[in-house]
Length: 430
Picture 1 (cartoon, one colour):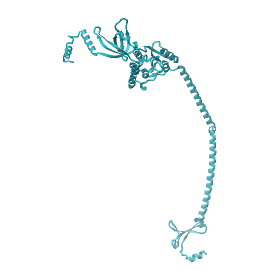
Picture 2: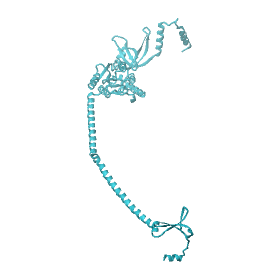
Picture 3: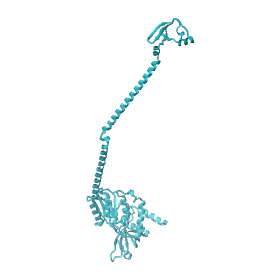
Picture 4: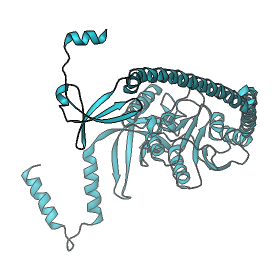
């Protein structure tokens, strides 16, 4: 910006105040000037409204952002629409080239379009793949985020098209499996530019209902363009942040929109979804009957095995006649006592005989036997003491003696002593 322009801008800014306000025309002109500077631009979006009346020189369109609740008015030459290779319809994804215009009289903005290009299916799929990679990197497809479905939900929320085959399939199959199940249905558009906003509103209502325990998004099959709303980023993020478990039942088995990856459970078809959200009452009753029969059979088998084991134990001799072993032990104890008594008596007799022999030996060599054979024990009496006389020197003449013989004792006095010579001793022995 030049110094004169900056000075002019500063002067204009200083001139504007509560006492010197801009008139509306000045503001409108300034906005138009700023928009004019933007120049021509490329814009992508989804056509939600087409107004092309015969004889008019301008066609009016509304272009909506696919990921936000925002739209932009378009104007173009009607011949531009007529020259398109493929007729433009509401819901088409397009890229337009044009220049913004600000109408000062009405204070509105529109984009004057000079070129319109339809977004091909290949490009749409490529964009879905890029969005898929982004959501996967954020962890929205992580299995750890997925919540388990309740075994028997009391109330099921259903988001589907009005009077659609998907709605009839879900209701008929679920109610045939579990007649007591209750549905809260929200009919929305399931294709086209209004599908995503309506489904977001229905999802928020059902997710905020405390009675709804699981939510099903159901739609029948369709082309890739028809299923585009179910790969919308806003819808995928809303499903990932919902508090209620959500089941995706979109199209047929080969169809795989991004909603299938974000939802807590992916059902192949609406019919499969109905089978997954509620149990089969008949199958559950049959399962209960089977479990009861198996439990009863197992109990009877256990009782029979225990009774057989008890009968075997009772048939054993030790249990058939518990006192029999005691009798055997009593007889064995008596036999052992008798044997012990005989052994003790024999030992006593042997010891008595031995003692008798020892006594006889002791008697034979004892002092009494010696005395009985004519020997005597001579003791010298010296006061209270007595000493055995072994030599003539122990009994000098005049000593008081006590002579012990076999049948008593003799008191005597030593008259004198006489030493024996070996010859005398031999003669004596002779």
